[in-house]
Length: 593
Image (cartoon, rainbow, N blue to C red; front, top):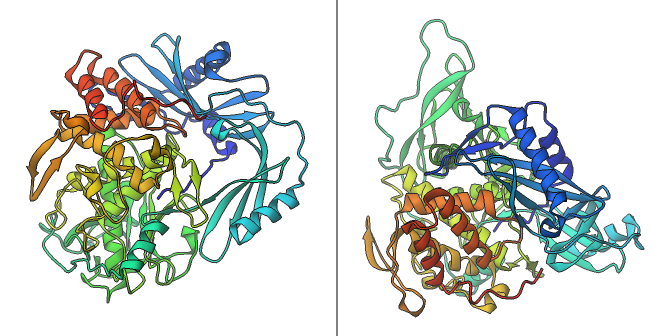
């Protein structure tokens, strides 16, 4: 589950005005959807200014109005001609929640359209009736913690335009973002500030069943064992330097890890070839500061022993999973890091005490892995597709920032944008497995198959409703709006699988799939590479924080048109794959925003 984290406008402004140009500015190839850093900040600046001007010139379409300011978060420049600028918004200097939009331009910087989150102009009440202290007190009671960081904002989500306070509430091991109406005092939203792989609802289900997950672990021959030894220096050397190390993991066997040699005979679990990506030991603390974690160091450059008796074993799994995820995004899309800014990805293992979960935590921009609770989950949750899933939440946050529609009192999230977020994390998480090609974790369209659940997997993309633990769904209906996000993710995950592999029975590797369709529509897949390129392009160009399944259909159709043409087999198959999960133009619901 992703954290519904609301980025502050200050961050966006810093990105937009950086002297070296926009972080995340990218070129995209016409056939693969790959990205690479833009070479000229001046070019990006010109595109941003053209997009901002166009947004105000076409206010009836873009929804911007007097008092609004647009702050560029990302610029994408496609060699086939299109330019796309993602903006966050302020209104009278107040951050606007749900005010994000993407302005689309042609090669000549002419306006071609907009993708917008808020379907209305932002016109909040002029004056707050609550003080910041009163709002903080209400937020603290709602989230049962200590309030801090109160900020006045405009809440434009869900068709509203309300003046509100955004408050951070923390306790010992968690934090929430609470939005309180500044006029009425009503708590508008109360969202957990951490990305949990396992939802509260699922954990409750497992407890009720008395189920205990028993993942298969142990040292084996992974995909990268050839020639692996701890590297040793000889003669004169400069430190720190890259070194070839060995990880003896819980889940993926013995693998190669690039580490940092800090001095003669001393090594650190930090990868200088991947922006300094590093795994540290939280040592049972609940810290959200990566700097508070303890560095993993040794003199052998061999990490772990394949068992939980070594604290470094889980770290080896984590470091392997994080670097493979980074490699997947860079190799496939030329994306340089989670935020496409060439900065390190970070992880902490042994986080908290008896924590049966793994998280993407935007507060520290890192992965946090619990060791399990010793009952339901008896091993650290450092499985490869868990890492790929959770880091993809970081990618989504840096791009469309898809948000759940509402959250219940237990922290379960609901609504189609949140379900789409979970689906994209499963889609790209499974792609990380296909990219890694590890013989101890063979690639498949199953999610969490290494967790040791009695169901043999947590979710699956080909036939989502086979997941009885979360009650995943195969097809869209109006009730999907009220479906918990992990269960609702089945709609778009199923559409993606059908686009990639097609309907009916099929065996890939050791897994037999048999994907059903709505009204028995037959779909012939276009292949995983093309399907993945389409979904990535749709995410980065045509999705915003409120994108639902019908809007995701439009986004993927636009992406397919960009990459392959409006008359292509790929475009037609995208349309058919959505129809096969009952998402069509004809049954598009009336806008709820």
